[in-house]
Image (tube, rainbow, N blue to C red):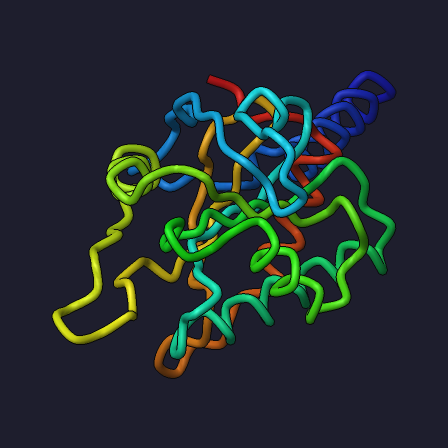
Length: 206
């Protein structure tokens, strides 16, 4: 009887551990790849590369400062994720936003842009100082996302509106809608929960 109780306890503990592990995050089947190398410039004019991401959980997206449609709600939504993570005391996470209009998005413009959202310093890195061909190909190759030049007579770059979860080893794990989509609300709680899981449990195993 005692042996049976002990085995039941062990089985229960294993179930709890399993439920709390990052196996609870179901990676998107289209991802699982590690981000390719890059060397760019952040909003402070400092160099930034994929090596600077090592050891932290990241949320990534694609925006530009002159965007008149999807970027304002996306950027606001990202700021609410940061607010929630900060409120919960989560460490070792950051956000990166790649500009899809690098010709116009200077470091100063990006710095002024992110200031509007009153996020803690050193949590949100905005990237530029590359050509359009690079970001178009990088978005497609790494994130399976479109970046297309503005239609004739427009200044509005076409780009994806997803947020991407990246683990401590630079592996792209999962994507989320960066804004309300039809009758589905922006999945802030899901993003926050997944970031917490990766921070607490470590990177996704191969």
